[in-house]
Image (cartoon, rainbow, N blue to C red; front, side, top):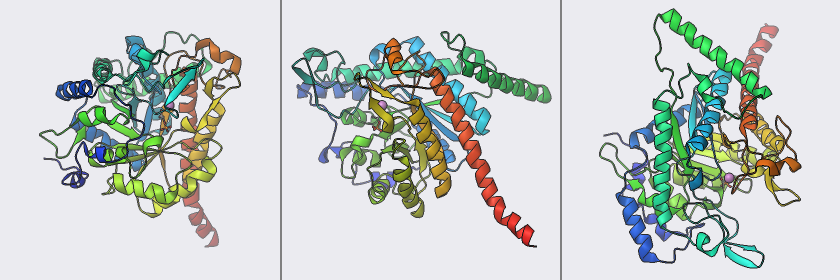
Length: 474
Ligand code: PEP
Ligand code: CO
């Protein structure tokens, strides 16, 4: 039996429901307690969406990313919606992530761990409880797992049956992703499968195709050299993640399994704690402390080093590589001042966390016309700053966390086509946060390669300098 380190905590103090004794923010009140119980009983009898083997395999890969042996690409929708559980939305999102990961593998010369924000990204934290339109006040939309986005009293009422729907839609999404990948869609011999129909001519697409062709040639060369086909090798895999927000759902999906000790959240491989629910004494930290999954923790600019260290201690008592990924989302303006103190504090405590940059959530703004957007330039600039700051602090940026879609949307300003405010209305589809479109996503992948290579080069130069100085002196 494989032992997971966090199981030590599980023993006496913790249970999947022990979060109930702590303040739980961002939860919904269900009107009918009996109906909630019935829905949870039904959910509890349904099969899990992932297995403990996969969860532990991802944890090992995240440990590799922490050690610099691979790079984490985490991306997908801000919020999935039930109506977007369609073949084209799912496969287009997969295509963008595959294209980005090919750019990263090619440029970084490192394996990439692919984690989708999908197959369960249905719950959203909100800054206000209620929303008022034309004098009518209703509960805010909190994601399809809780209520509907349409502005009617019926839709906005939290409905526990939606948890069953979310489980089914997640399973359908997972099933399609797994079938596509197992069936050969992600085979590196055929990057043409990943082309998006609606992209006719984009400058970045040409650059991308040159890269894909060069990868194809290398594979064929290796096959010729070895005198045999790699078959569907090198095959890629995908993991799922979502914000671990709606505690009754998450704790009901928390299971024990025969082969591994401990408790696993089997609704996803990689749950993360959102910035608004990361309080040390809160229910979300309590719940996550006891499960054996790898955990993500979103950290914003107001968090103080001491505070962060205490949450890290609660979530990762054993300092287990791969267990904790810290996803920083500072905003382009604050990253220079807010990030270094956290990096130094965590480093000086010898903490083995994987650092990941989310350059989206600190850069949201609203246009004069009331549209929620993000400037590509700010996203690019936070990411660039994060690479530089990590290098200066002697820590490593091992991953990125992005909101993106394979649909042809106009939600973020700037990028390859220099989208302007007036263009946003053309195809703004997100019900929550603005996402990068195809070209903007590829551009970010190419920028990561440039930044990563220049930091690696710089650190080689820095390491060579003392030697050069000694040689000169001798
Ligand atoms: C999100 O990832 O969609 C989100 C709400 O992020 P954060 O918790 O960083 O604000
Ligand atoms: Co978001």
